[in-house]
Image (cartoon, rainbow over all chains, first blue to last red; front, side):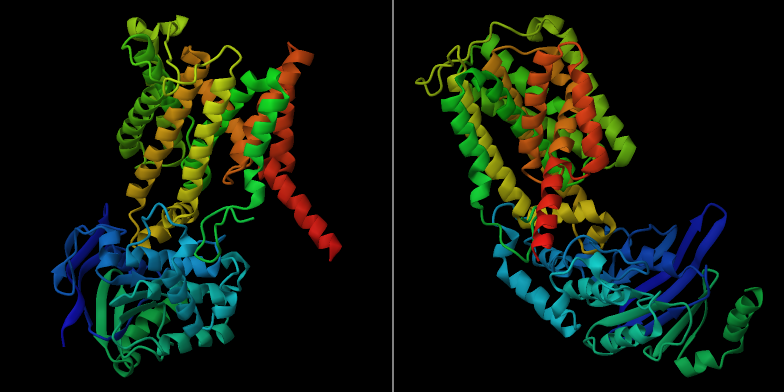
Amino acid sequence: MSAVLETRKLCKRFGALTVAENIDFRLEAGARHALIGPNGAGKTTFVNMLTGRLAPSSGRILLGGDDITESRQAARVKRGLGRTFQINTLFRSLPVLDNVALGIAERSGVAGSLWRPASAYGAIRDEAMELLATLGLADDAAIPVLDLPYGKQRLVEIAIALGLKPKVLLLDEPAAGVPSVESERILRVLDTLPTDIAILIIEHDMDLVFARHITVLVQGEVLVEGTPAEISGNRRVHEVYLGEQHHA
Amino acid sequence: MIRQASYYSGARIGWLEWLPFAAALVVFFALPEYVPLGARILVYILFALSLDLILGYAGIITLGHTAFFGLGAYVAGILGAKAGVTDPLLQLAAAGAAAAVLGVITGAVILRTKGLTLLMLTLAITSILMEIANKATNLTGGADGLSGITVAPILGLFRFDMFGKTAYLYCLLFLLIGWWVVRRLIYSPFGASLTGIRENVVRMHAIGSPAYARLVAVYTISGAIAGCAGALLMQTNQFVGLNVLSFEFAGELLVMLVLGGVGRIYGAFVGPLVYMIAQDQLAKQFPEYWYFGIGLLLVAVVLFARGGLLGLVDTIVAKARGARR
C-alpha cells in the first residue's frame, strides 16, 4: 500500500522544549488510523504541522508523494488535506448551511467572485444541503451555529471538512466534550464516511472501535504502532496511561 | 432584512432600500436651503459606506480611513488647481485610482497585522500623509489649504452653481453608484468570504481561503471609494483643507458609523445623516456646547443600542412582532 500522507523525521522545538522528536509517520490510502497519547504528548502540535499552521523545526511532510513542508495552509487544503478542530472553530453567527457553503465555494473556486449574489450559486447551496442531509443536519440548515446543541456543532465541524472533498481527513478529537449519547451519533457518522478518504483521528485514549491502526505518541515521540489488539495488550502503553491516572 | 451574504437566501433589493434616495430627491425639491448641507451628508454617507465595507464586513479596524479620502481630495484638487485638469469626472477617476494604489500598497503591508497593531499602523499612515500635505505647500497650500481650484461643468453641460444644486445631484448620483457597488460586493461570494474572515479567520485558512489576499482586495476597493468621496467633497467646496487627512475626522467618521450601526449597509446612511443634522441643529442652539450633545448621543447609543440606531429599530420591530403573536 502507498502512503497518502507521510512525515519523515519531523521535529518541532520551542526553545529548549521539544514537542515533536523525529516523528516518522505513514497514513495509508483509505486508512482508519488513530493517533493517541496522553495530555501534552504533542498530538495537536503534530496536526498543526501537518496542516501548515505551525512550521516544523526540521523534517519533511509529504502529501500524495509531494513535499508540502513549505506549502501554505490554503495550498494544502487545495491538495486535499482537510481537518476538523478539537475546539469548535466555526462561523458561529452564520447559518449551518453557510458554514458548509463557504468551504464548498472555496473548493469550487467561486469564493472570490465579486458580482453575482452568493444566493444565485444554486449548485453550491444544493451540494451543501445534500451534505447536511447525509449527516442528519438538513433541518438545521437555516439555524445559526451558536443556537445548535454542542454535539451538532461537532457534526458541523465534520460537515465543513467533508465539503472540501478531502483525500486525507484529520479529525482532532471529534467527540471531545460531547455527552456519550451524542458521541455515538458522531461515531455512526464516522463509520459511514467514504472509504476513499484516508482518515487520521486524534484521540486522548483508545476507546474508539473505529480505528484499525493505532500510533501512540508520548512526549513528542512515537512510542509504538500496531493494531488495536496489539496496542491494548502493550505493557508500555498501559504504563503511560496508568502513570497518568496515578498522578491525576 | 438580511445584512450579509448568504448562500441560503436572496439578495433582491427591497422597496425600503430605495427610500434614502427618494428622500434625498424630496429634500432637493422641498428644502433648497438644506441642499448644501445635504450634499455634504451625501458625501459622508459614501465615505461611511466605504468604511463599513472594511470595518463592518471584513472586520478591519482602522482609524486612518481619511488617508484615502484626503488623498482623493488632494489629487482631484491639485489636478484642478495646478495641472489644468478641470473635467470633474477625470478628477474623480484620478482620485479613485490614486486611493486604490495607496490601498494596495499600504494594505499589503499592514493587513499582515491585526488588532491594536493594525489600528496604530492605519493611524501612522494617515499622519504621514498629513505631514506631507502640510509640508508640500507649493502643491497643497499647506495649512492655508488648497484654493483656486477650477472644476469645469460636468460633461461640459452642468455647471457647479453657487446654490450647490448641481453638486447635490452629482453627489447623489455617485452615492447611488457607490451604494450599488458596495451592495453587490457584500452579497457576493467574495462578501460572504469577508464575513467568514471576520467571524473566524482560523477556519477560513482551514477551508483553503486566501484570507490575506481577500483583505487586501477589499481594502483597495474601499480605499478607491473613499478617494472618490474625497474628490466629491473637494468639487462641492472647491477647496481642500488639511483636516481631510486628520485623525479627528477619521474618528468622527467612525462615530457616525457606530451611531448608525456597523456591519449593515444602511447604518452608513443613518449615521452621517443623524450626526450631521444633530451637529447643525445643536450648533445653532448651543454654539459653544454642541459637541456635548453629540457625546451624549453616542454614549446613549453605545450603552443602550449596541447595534446603532438601526439595531435599535430592529429590536423594536422584533419586540412588536413578538407582542402581536
